[in-house]
Length: 242
Image (cartoon, rainbow, N blue to C red; front, top):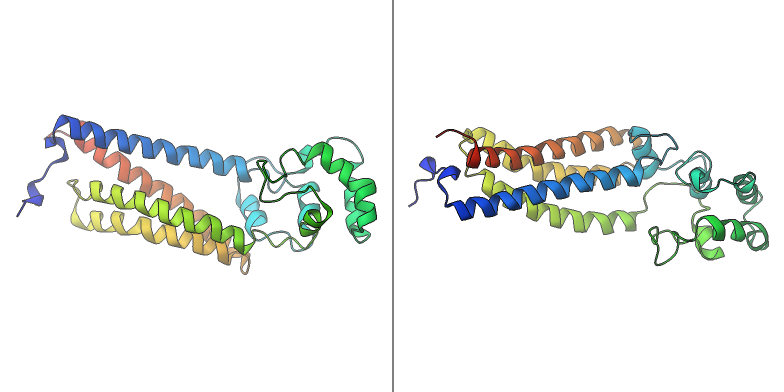
């Protein structure tokens, strides 16, 4: 049986250390890019600069006092895309008057076509919320209840599976480090638990908005665990004195 207690990452062949290091650096870079994507996606959700609890609450719980379209254009992330004076007020008035189809064609459709449809179409960046027809716009004139369950399921199942596989590989590499056994146990188990908690809380926020704080904590903890799983093996392979 191999003597794993005396195993050292630093004693691996140079080519294998190089391959593992390239993998760790690539995964770390990918996680940083994912963080940038998270910021760009949600940082204007509540209409204020910067990514905060308000953005996450508005994105996943919604604004139960308003429709989704109204909350987006009145102080939300879409307000910046309606620069012409009066356009926002016309859409809000149309919603308040009952969102009739004739008013959509006469007033709302030209505004959306000029400012929104370039992204909100089946092939655009916001293809999950198309605004190219009256029927599609009616979907977002309902009360804003945040992220719909079908979108949560689509995002959750791909992220849980893919990130779970990444954690499996990172945990395998980390298990060969010279850290104490109790630290290894915690650092190997926690990422999987935090990943499930993060997406579980993301779904439950629509029923209990206070859980947004738990989701923010789990996201921050996941980032910290990513850093530990990547930086500790790199340190042992290249910097730690034997």
